[in-house]
Image (cartoon, rainbow, N blue to C red; front, side):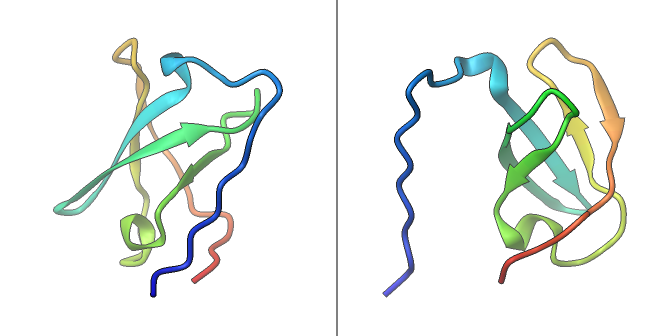
Length: 71
């Protein structure tokens, strides 16, 4: 069974919080979790290591760095 975590937010973010994460040939969705630009995404998106490219919904993109993982 795959672990699942559901979180209910009092003031959920809109679609503007959704980002596109690319690492090598892997492409995933992510979500902005704070104003500092921290992104939460699936482990397999960043497991290969390196510097993932993150694209915001407005088309702005930048190269990120993995700050921590939870396998």
